[in-house]
Length: 127
Image (cartoon, rainbow, N blue to C red):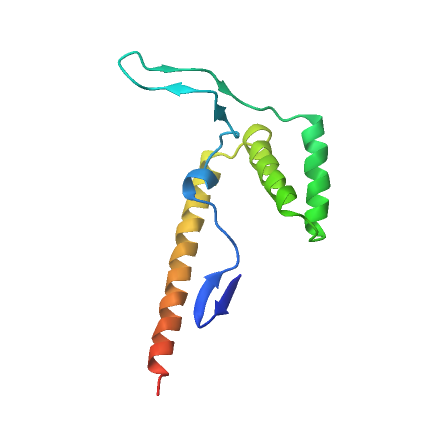
């Protein structure tokens, strides 16, 4: 959806950065990185696995979201669970990732075109 606020077109939907949106990786957090000096060492990366408790919490938060009653913390939790679920239970294929990148590119182009259109008409409608 798009909204016109103060004669500017803005997107009501936040699109995740391409690096995040196109990833099949779970929410991983490195325990530590020591990249100084010649003996660069990287410790193990901790990953999470999809569990029955996570699946139930995902369903519960999805229902609450459908009703439009999520808090900011619940929304962040749902986003985290969504990414983890997508990467572990339903990883996207290469074709899906490429299609998504193309979709984001086309959407960005459309938003820019609409912004230019609004700016053009705003400039020509001045007295």
